[in-house]
Length: 318
Image 1: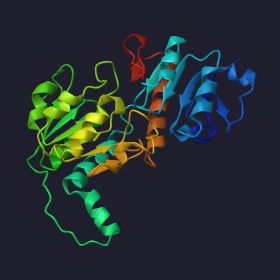
Image 2: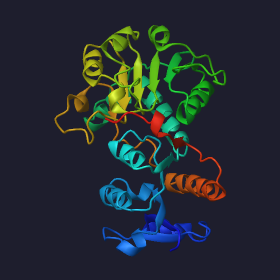
Image 3: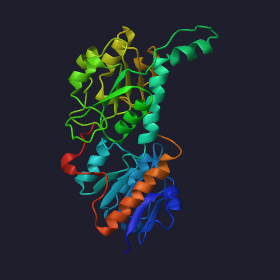
């Protein structure tokens, strides 16, 4: 019996001869993979083209592969309970963390510029045919706290530095390799004009930005969340924006996704909402697949895998 690599039909066509001696076992549309072929699957790749429409079918197929030893996912975050299920079954888990760092960081910069210029108000005025000029705040010289020193956080720091902003990092333990000064979150919150959340969801980061933390931010501060919705107290954030304490927010992630149509977040002033899409670009699938292929070569050679999530340190589920 050969060594099978389970993936979508789209990725199967793109991989070509990049998988060495592995036999590709494609998941075609929503059809079932025949049992004999599924039984050969030693490796599985959950790719970006399967998200979100085909996620349930593709993941369930991979969960039912009896000989699966390793799953690689295109995503950075693996806080969804299903990834814990793979780990509990003894399946190794790796991610393409970093593949989406550049587009997400650029989205953060876009939001900082848009919120500081009150772009939502300008768009409303355009829609209503109202001529309403007003001054806006410049970002140059302002302090921005970046919570999380992964690939996304580091790229955000690089870009905001180029804008003339003063970044300051926040992480649980300072390693000494940070691209800027890092301090505890309690110390930094009262001093910044903007707060960027780019951390994984863990027991420690759930509700990290609670009501007290939001109250510690200066009047007029901006909040950008490209982490997970559970990292911030959404109700406290909404109240701070409605009261005028905070200057605005850009949220790409939410505690409940899709965001319910009756959520109060939709109608907040100077708030930009996006559907968990800050890293979904036309180039992401290829970059994520490149990371999988490189890990596949490591797997074959018996070398350590990049971005492996260990069961003992896995992220907490929702």
